[in-house]
Length: 358
Ligand SMILES: Nc1nc2c(ncn2[C@@H]2O[C@H](COP(=O)(O)OP(=O)(O)OP(=O)(O)O)[C@@H](O)[C@H]2O)c(=O)[nH]1
Ligand SMILES: [Mg+2]
Ligand SMILES: [Zn+2]
Image 1: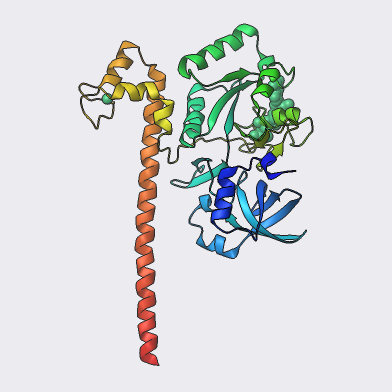
Image 2: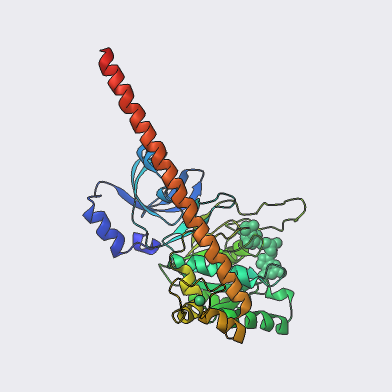
């Protein structure tokens, strides 16, 4: 297998040469199990760990390898390999870590397309779809909406749901499939290109792993029904894994998400809500929050019914989350800086004292 078949490109190669990484092997992380990584190189699949230095200097999860990463590593033998460097990523899918304010969780890296998977049953939720979309847009990953379990409802039912999506989320490709009858698979398979990486995002139980197994023709991932009452908060898939399909596309399966918190979505919201953004250019005040200002074009459009009120409210909610995330991060940085100064001063005093004692 060539590295190119795993998605390696000129950008990564240029970095490798510019940084004199000739002495290292290059590989891609295909799975992660609690800081032990499975790396796929041109001729092997091996387990690897990171250097102590990488662990020590890491400031957040973003500095650790993730599934999808290209890394430079040294292979000592079939049992031991050490990851020295993460090659710069062209995309990072991340969210606000569930229940940890201001903390980022990396879902996957170097992703070309994300399949946002939602089932037609009670999982269907247009606001959440917009959330996933925002996450994709802020990480420059092209989204594709996949509506699953269409076998559970009739044609008019499917039509109604696709109508709701198309009205709110116009330009994003949308495919309705059944993992049981495989209806819709032909279109889905046509979208998967050789050498490109696709990531499956969505709640638990929507059929991500079933879809992946069907597409790969193998039972790579375990799939199951979870009883809501006995398995509260659990999901069937518990780790992330990259699988190479026969047509050369790569698919990353993820554990289902219960919370899709917005983290650092620089311009994700602007892209997701481009109509609102375009209108806001005309608002009377530059710093208009579009909530109660006089001369607000956005509010006016909502009143006139030109913007869907539910979409507008979802936008405001995520905008608030985004600012909250930013201020939590800023506050933590400030605290850490202060703490760093205390440590520095302490060390200085200690050194002075020990000099005196000599
Ligand atoms: N009727 C129907 N059932 C489906 C479909 N896709 C998946 N299922 C069933 O839904 C259940 C959950 O499927 P999984 O593939 O494990 O779901 P998942 O998204 O991987 O869930 P997590 O790993 O927990 O995130 C299984 O019992 C599947 O057989 C579908 O298209 N139609
Ligand atoms: Mg799964
Ligand atoms: Zn406004």
